[in-house]
Length: 153
Image (tube, rainbow, N blue to C red):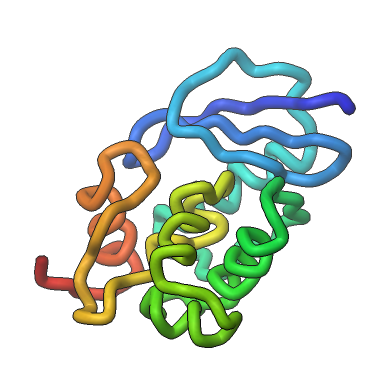
C-alpha cells in the first residue's frame, strides 16, 4: 500500500490530498510534504481549484474513503447531493433507517470533506451546525455560499 500526497493552497488554507492504490482516500486541512505526487493527485488538485473558482460543480475522481458500513452508506448519499443543494440530517437518516445524530457522526468522520460534500447537510431548521473541517461552521457557510446557498445563521 503506497500512499502519495500532494499539498495545495486553497481559499480555506492549505489542503493535503492523499492517494492510495489509485484512489483518493483523504483530504486533510493542513500542509504536508509532497510525497510521490501522481496524475490522480494532480487531477484532484485541478478539480478543487476549479471548484473554488466556481467552474466545477461535480467532482469526478476515484474515491475509496475508509469507514464503517454505516459511514460509507451515509457518505454515498451525501456524495449524491447536487452542487447548490442540501439535505437535512433527518432526511438522510430516514433514507437509510438511521438517526440524525448518527448521520452527524458520519459527517464528522468524513475523510474527504469538500469532495464528499458534508457541508451540504443541514439541521432540520435549515441551519448550520458543526463542520469537521478547519474553521468549523464558518468554513461550512463559506462552502455553501460559494455554491449559491444562502443560510442565515
